[in-house]
Figure 1 (cartoon, rainbow, N blue to C red):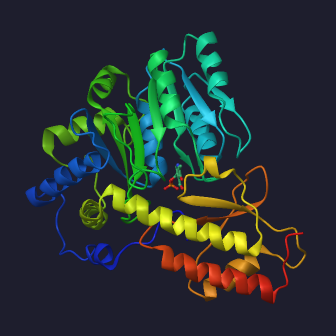
Figure 2 (figure 1 turned 180 degrees about the vertical axis):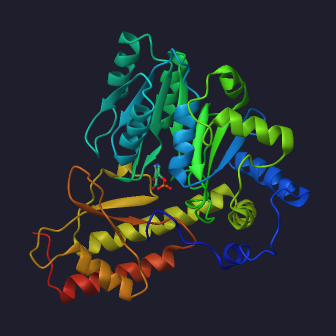
Length: 362
Ligand SMILES: Cc1ncc(COP(=O)(O)O)c(C=O)c1O
């Protein structure tokens, strides 16, 4: 029940077992082209967007987008209300790109009016980077409202949708994200090892003339190479791409609506269990992604996260620690190849654990 690498189906695991193949062969090029199309299709972007894929974890895609799309005279606004917003700032600082940060507590909801006043005051801003589902807290940031600001102030949007892509419906024809980033190992239910940036074609083309700040993670460089040759620019993680292809096919069979419904049922089941043991949630329900929930740690002297973790681990369940939110939490994700029955099992074990250890929250 960790937010990634999320659990995968047996058929995705089996897709890893392919005969040795040179990734410069036509066969692998065809697979790559097809995977890229499917990656974009998940968010209904094929009319307007293209995917650029990288060997690397999710951060590779975030770094590729942030380092490649801001012009030399550009300036980026970053929303920091969790570890992944903060990480975007760290990347921008490492490249020395002009920026400012709208920083609030990890678990605080962004105030759209406050952000708007930043755009009003600072006319140098050309980009806005924010996380859709801030996995630190399980908060769903207000994507439509933030995109409206981008349109109103004519800045390009860079959205880290690492842990929402394929979990929540995102339609790029309705939500005009310029650069959407995700990876193979979260709600799309593939293996860890690739990250992708789904970029608006017109916006991406404009970056062609920007002096490159890097090579391996350069968005335009990778995109133009793959357009010309049909192949990854650098050695791809071959088996991971086969597994991603299988995961994408499974997604289209399940459908976005089916996947979201499965995840949401597991979330509702989790909340019943949390309620039964009397634990509190970090965030009001209206702010929940319904993909991961941060639960406030009980104050009882009998509670110890690592001991609870080990108890669950012995029972074949992996739970996840907190990550610097405004209150101490542990986190339970309901993404991956699981459903509400797995959550019922978790609830049963949680109740038993709290009863055995006599942990109360008062
Ligand atoms: C919202 C978000 N952004 C970025 C990342 C970084 O991805 P990775 O750890 O795969 O580099 C994560 C990972 O959990 C994430 O949840």
